[in-house]
Length: 409
Image (tube, rainbow, N blue to C red; front, side, top):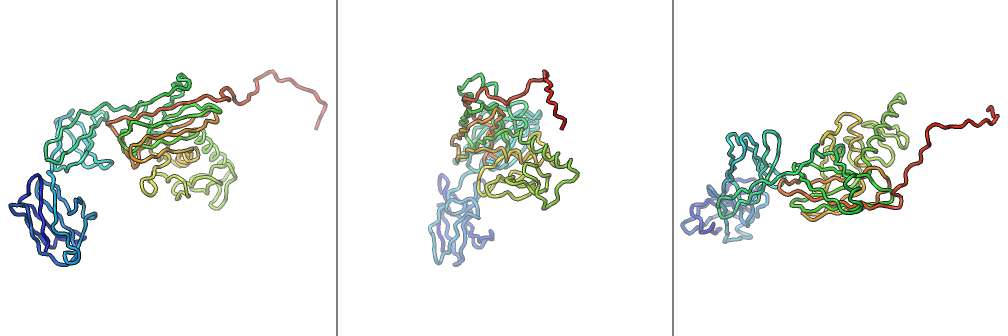
């Protein structure tokens, strides 16, 4: 026999209690009386227990919301009676916006529902107590968002106004469209420069670049976070991309591409599908070696480990043939380091800048995280170095002098 009670703010009358097996099959039931109590005679089979009533969130015993995480027990061998359930009201979130706006309801990085506010109103029903995000996508593509909390007492939640979302134009969502902040850092002359921007979409990145100083240093902070964002630092990705493409072109001009099993010479970039050179990351579709970032598609590694680089479909990246290979490989080969603290902790990277080429910064959300309600702060300090004015030697054009030696070979 299993006994128990159901409560909300007062004992809940007329709620159904079910004993279910691992597949969800119902074996026994009971209904709460005027005191909110129930009694159920069951077998010795290990079962899970859930309570449900229209207008309330279904709850499994021990405050679980899913059958998969519920605590099953045998009433004969490990009876946990009396069982207690606390049910929360399901409520609606409603509001007004511009007619034709698409309104999305998110929980974390999970899209729960989407409606179109055809007449300027929207509503989401049967929501359990939790924190949610509303995303408003206007007909012209403009996007804003806000957070809303559904309280456990069943009261109607208030939807706060959506703050302004900061996105640069053109959108700096790939390394090919990285925002150049070189001039700001030069003007700052070693003082901090802070960039404020939103990461406004699932699985998006924000990219920045600046000219390095030979022998100098760069310090990069990421702060003001309400979701888990990470930052990565790279050498000149564009230069690496060009070198890979040039190498692939040179191999093609030899008259034949190396066949499978032919190891190309050191420094050559193999075409898509060819065996990589010594030290290279795997080609498109190959499984990455130990320590490498995931292949195209940016599938995260085990757990919630951050990724390195964007997939070739992001922003204006090429998606065909050798360009795809070069786009992915350029990021992997240029990668310097990552700061990936848990939760909403700040991130920090410091690195030496050994050349006057570009350096890249990528801001990305762990498991696709993004925030329309709180822009991140990216602060960079670029310090000068002893090689500030050192550049490659170049010969002056013209003015060549012929020296006669008498040598005829």
